[in-house]
Length: 336
Image (cartoon, rainbow, N blue to C red; front, side):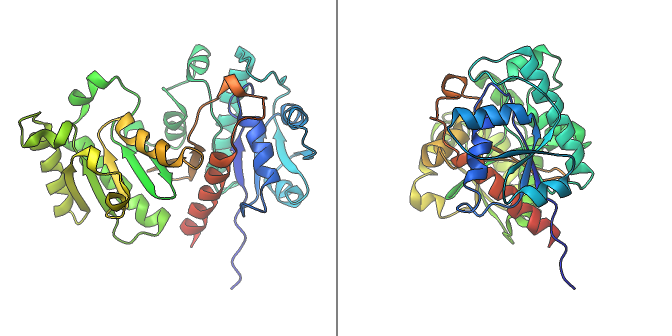
């Protein structure tokens, strides 16, 4: 039996005043070199055409009505499901742009849930601007989770680069709130979701998960903090009893050198910067944000709107290329 080709990926522009539009143009231009699967954009054809002109790019932008048309045109033009007629003003975010970002994200989610697209790649948004127009949740991850009928706590953010994957167990919260948020249930649940996703989506049969401590030197056996003794170590024991290869807690400052990274497939970290600083130090232009625990494939480049350099030809397309490529690889594994 001949396998049926996968539907194309769908990508959103994010905020049209950010770097999202120009990076999608660059991604299409580099589709062959990066070996990208077919993708189309939900957004504004006029914005993408203006972004291409700003880049002095001759990439053709073609409006399509559906995913099948997108596949037909992908070899010769960047296909766009043209749902908005916004203006392109890089570096100048507007309420109109935030509405476009919200509405196109919602439509893209619907397409993936319907099976019209094989995965979703989201462009960067401005969270403050989105919340001003009533955007539900603190970010796109929570919005996509809600669209999928998944509890926000079960939509787990993983950041991935060529030599490192990290799992921040708490994400966009003040550092002072982290000790109160960490409990055994949160640690066990999120690492369990991550272990299952690494097996299903990344082809790792028995993923090795190294768990960082919260405190310096992983608490020095309780001398520098009690969380490792009372919360993190017991959670690791429960995970191991369930058959998950979790180890730790380790001193975070010893986990991310080359020899340390070779010992695990995923580093589970206690807070945002503990995870993202090493990831971005190693793979600033290749980092991908992957949402685990969803019934759909969702990735995103690991950067923001970068309003200050939008339209100036300074933004790197590396993370967008990596996000598109990873989404395609996960979609193929799920189908297989």
